[in-house]
Image 1 (cartoon, helix red, strand yellow):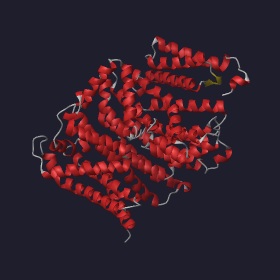
Image 2 (tube, rainbow, N blue to C red; image 1 turned 120 degrees about the horizontal axis):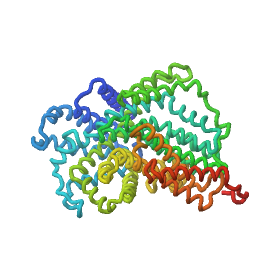
Image 3 (cartoon, rainbow, N blue to C red; image 1 turned 180 degrees about the vertical axis):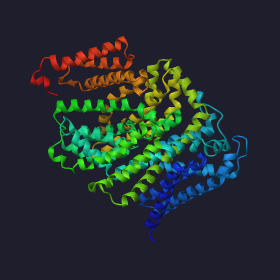
Image 4 (cartoon, rainbow, N blue to C red; image 1 turned 45 degrees about the horizontal axis):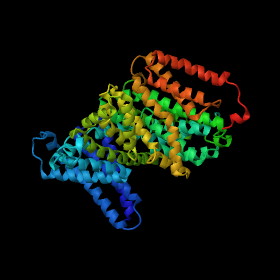
Length: 625
């Protein structure tokens, strides 16, 4: 029997077992420690099982042997924990003895997780986790305020792999209770025809507008982001369709790739899925997931509105980006509209108060059933097999990094690193909130370079959020602030993963694409400051307060976009451009409904009216870009 066939059988058995057990967990739950151990090491085994597909070149037999050994060890740990869980659940933490088998399971588990991280997301997260592990053992060598006595091997085992913390803690809980169900829904919905429908809807909706090709990318990525947990997956799935269309409509390769990169990055902030980090946030804060999704709605709308304004102004002053009629040759949309029943039902189920896993399961079942209602949307039976395999593969790639971040969480909390950082940030920021926010932005972006967003967010929430709440920032606002800038690290040079993916599809220069994507994202850097000053923007408070706050944020982002483009009907002069900048900052910094805020609203309306209605028409030379 060929090796590839053997590996395919192993992949199928592992994938169906993993998906089947986690689905069963919804109906017949088992104790947290039991399901967490199964989930973590089965997910790690899936990483090894699927990574062997890429093996080729020199020393193939050796690399296959290493992969198979790691795979066997991962499955062995699943079995070992099955038998050891009863003892681990009964033991008294930090009191009962630690046996050699516990040390073995700890060392083997950590090593397997680290190698799975390298295979799934690369070296960046691996280096971060290794630094924290070294710090845990050698903390007494750290300088100044970083110094602490360090942990012994047995203490590390106790904290990381023998209780419902560490790799079996909040990250595993979020993956089992939230992430899995939404990954399953996203996979089913995309494979049964929902993904192409989103792109076609976006193209139809934007084809008649200036810059329709880029707006198609924004709308398509926002829709896809509602069901996808990954900015990279969003870029690759929508980018293969949108980037060539943008290029043919007049955009350079770099402009097309940069637009898709920032559009897909925003998909991680679009409810209900919000790039998986929202599930972890719900667990960390102990609040219902639907409140996290509601909190993300207005900022996400402002995010895409700001990008729409940028795209529109740029298209109007340059004359490029319109969609040609021949590009609209697509299958009829009307016979496929019923496919939207599944995501709409999922959202409605969430809003009326059902749990997030239940809502995702409702969406999943409807994604399987609804397409068979019309012949044009029938799908082959093999799609069910593809869905299981895709879900298992995605969960392996997501869960291995999450388990590794669990190690970081233990070290950061048990060493009091977070508390020490709060003191340090308070001292440097001199209790100045805005200076501290700028320092947190730099920390989030630097830390987020090369890390999965959810990993960057978890580490950021441990280190930065306590410092912000200590300065009076609302807890949810502080977490959303950290999440936003960790997400924006995906398009911030020099390590901008979304930019790399988009540039690869477009065949563009990576550095130029990265710079353009960063420039496009500048308008979004304003949004988090708004909800720091006005938590109503996170759907907290009375409806009228939320609505008024949203109007102010939309106007602020509009002003900022006009300032960046220096264009509104005609090119702005330096005084008009400065006025838009000042009014944008005023609306963000001043409390909603304060005297200065109201003055900013009135002044913005007058300035926009001046540009559209009263400003003298410039000469042809002055109109030129």
